[in-house]
Image 1 (cartoon, one colour):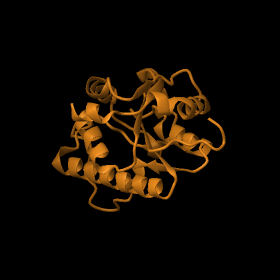
Image 2 (image 1 turned 45 degrees about the vertical axis):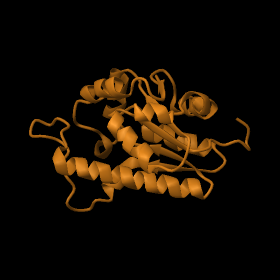
Image 3 (image 1 turned 180 degrees about the horizontal axis):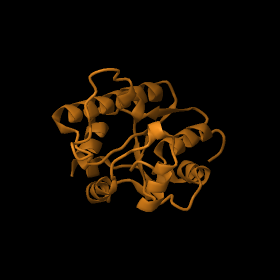
Length: 194
């Protein structure tokens, strides 16, 4: 990719906690001539009061009906902001956890920017766990995300680009995404309808 080239559409980077979504999406945006990072976590942080507890009594991920509603609201806001940037000529590089095909279909249905490119960062779980453990305490995830990783593989294993970044630096991963996302990560509209 030359300095004048950019990625058309919207790049969505997902994976488990500790996969490197936020770090890599920032680095990808920095490498493009006009790009914006759209961090899905920010929309949860904006809920100052009334935020749902996403964990059950045993500390497992289980958002319940209100939590699901709030997660859906995050997706709506992520799509709206990404579209605003795309319409202004900036490539939106969004990062958020996407677990199911239903969630991806919802995002694709709301998002006007095309093509939609999905990169699933999938380092080995032990690498993601180590990365999570070394983050600042306020950004660490305290639940076991192995079930999330299994569900992502089951639900989305045939969609987008599954990139094992376990042995790469964030910079190497970002360089690879910038170079190859347009050819490896585009999600077909037909696949979303299946």
